[in-house]
Length: 121
View (cartoon, rainbow, N blue to C red):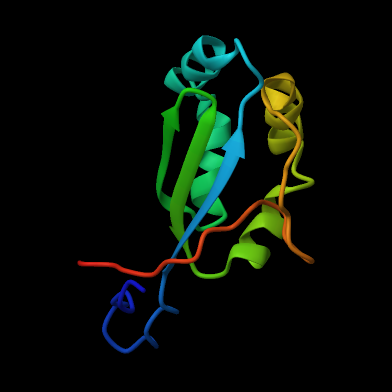
């Protein structure tokens, strides 16, 4: 877990940021298109992610396996802000053909979440 962020003097401290990670799979043969889309993420999508409180967002790829990680205060609250926003809906529709179906979802999961077992700041 990342320590609490500092607020301006006299303001209560910001809630602590947490690191979240999950995995996704691409359909075979779409890695190049996926990489290209992420080299040119729409400015309005980046602004939406930031406004929802997401920072330090990274996506790693090995063939069709994706490992995604970012920081936010609360995963569910953050994703709830994004899921029905028109910009996100357009992005998800644009990207949907790239993704294989989720496998191994646990009850209540949106994505196959990873559990952090070690962090060295």
